[in-house]
Image (tube, rainbow over all chains, first blue to last red; front, side):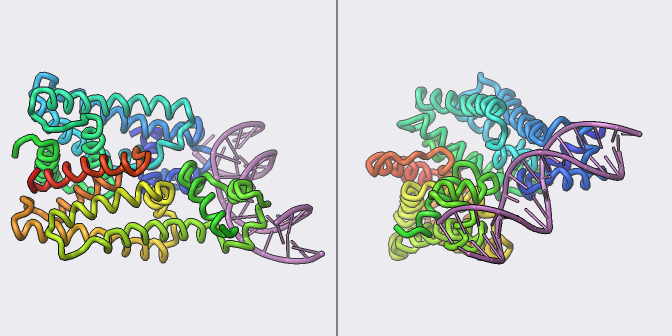
Length: 188
Length: 188
DNA sequence: CCTACCGATCGGTAGG
DNA sequence: CCTACCGATCGGTAGG
């Protein structure tokens, strides 16, 4: 692991524990056994560190959603999206926490880019739910509201979810899939 | 409205828009037409201001939950809890935002107190869901996980919910109640 | 990669 | 309620 990666990992840990603004560059330097000024050989600014973490998390959520086959029927597709979301959360709980808690502190330009990624991510859920509403899989009046409901249930989980191995994750994801499919009026 | 209330209201707005650490006491002073130092005639410290906002929000969520009659059957009781949560959110979106985003920056003592209030709030949901699981209203294996699911769906809504009058709120709450009762395997 | 430093800004206080 | 100030800390840089 090179120095830059080491710094980004430590920043993910510190930012998720204490918050972006509470963590100083000296805190970060200490965590990787450097003096404060020496960080700047590897990174351009504090905000760049935050951006790397947030964008990496966004990339992983998007990649997970993209990997769910569009050919599946809406119910299975939605289940796949839910499982993927929880899998990314389990794998990247620190980066995901920074993503949700601190992305608003990015510069306007970078924040806009992340917003676009969030919209794209939301799009996967919206299309799946709208498809399911159209073909009778789901019973929802307003696909947009249903999407916000589903994403709310998913987005908050980083606050209390402590990944404890893949077995626990699978059982947990099963329950979550059941709740969500039921909520939209799909079977089970 | 006295000066202190004015300051707390302005702080609720500023903290919810920009975050606690990004907002300086000079920003807050400017918002109420004072010089920086003059704030301290009305408040003891920046953290006291945060504590007032967070504790006020916690109080309102708890009061709403307490007002739901324990004599109602579990389904109606849960519906009441959901409606109450969304009503507090609509009424106090700024304080609620500060509550969720910034409570972790309180001193350990105050954070512990808020944690207790959160546990108490969660308790209303947990007891209702456990009651419903026991009498067959709900079909859930794990009442604790079901509670976390319901609270996740509710807690994230402050991120995107923009209250637009009581009519919109009622229609919105109806949908949310439907999703949640269905998720737990209650009818509708 | 370190030492030493920069200007800027912070929360809070004294004195009136 | 204001002016003027305090020490502390911040992100970032220069020079080696």
